[in-house]
Length: 312
Length: 256
Image 1: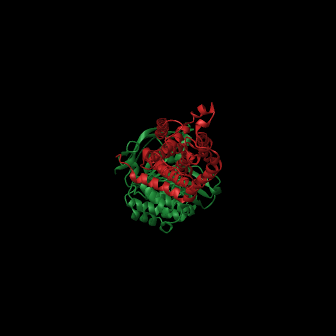
Image 2: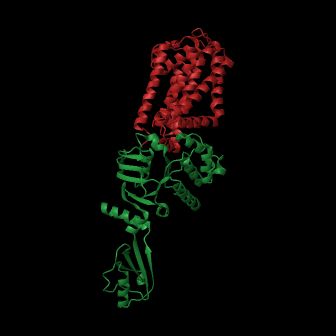
Image 3: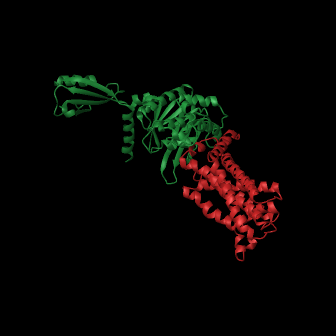
């Protein structure tokens, strides 16, 4: 696939001396949904802000659809729509006026038909003549998305699109994002809700302390880094782990009622059948068992804490 | 692609003009009422006891100064507010991420603010006719001067709006610097009426040259020659443009 955004050696050091981004290299493929995950303050918003032209990079370069974002900023920016994290709206404008304004600002001739479509898609059509200040927080966020879509961008940045958003709007937003992708729009979203990345993203990038730790297809990432946990509900509680089980990573849980085994789901031999056989031989009976695949969240927490541990 | 973003300029210009439209009564009624009050107090009450100045009736003499006084403050106020509000409300993100050049941004914001200033200036001029007889000797130059003043002070206001970090800072320059300088700059008197050393001191006030030049377009007489006035205004205009150029080049208080 062709890359639609290409980031090379991008760094940002703020005037205060804070190193927000260490050299970042990243290619976003055309038509994908890319989720940028990371804790607060990791540099997600800084990265987006540089690509969109709000923050000036210290070093490095970015191209959007082949256009350098500094030298050829007009062409680059016309392709990009941005929904920032904070709710910033013009209170006194009507919904219709503020969305129409955005389209003009991005250099597109008026198109009432397109504005109407965007407003209808976002369930804002009934509110088109309402002043933005009269709307609820969720509605204001829809207005910001409508503004970002007003000029038919090919690349859409959503910075924490569902932070502080109710469940209904979150579902709507996910639906909208998928629809946009089907229409060929490339979507880059930042989030610290892993659930969101897991639900929507094709690829995931994890950023921590200004460094991209991992960029991977979501499914591959989960497979590669995913661990499985086997939990056995024992027939009789154990006070301590008996000898002869050293070959497996085992832990007693629930006051000896549960035996937990964490293993690498990708390993050729997981050792589970052997473990069960050994338990049988030792006379340790069990009533039930379940296995659980680790979620993206577990992976993420693991990665970030590993980094922190490594850096300390 | 370096095509001029006319849709963008038009969008900002219309947004700003609509903003003025929302407050059309306070925007337009205030200068009219203020002007009327000045004419009643200075023109009628005090003016009736004063003779002619430079061969002009006092009531008519103060008309150019009054127009300038309101246009200075209105231009600075409107233009600074126009760019300060998006900064304050956070909506500036959209402008910064839009394919709009620095030149286009200034053209749209300053153009809109200057439009309003010129309209206010003309309204005051029309209001003045209700109170006194004023004839303009050089109408074309007078209009040109009016537009130049509006543009220059709107540029100055734009700079102020980018510089200001609070509403207080936004107010402080027009209220504490421009207003006193205008009063002392011969808005209501000829600086020849001042005793030395005040007369000479006044020549350091840049506003003197602007008011004097504008008055020259009315009556063919000013405190200083029209050439000096035009040079002073061109200098101020050039200074404002240079500061704005520097601000956009460095991203001063706009980008980090």
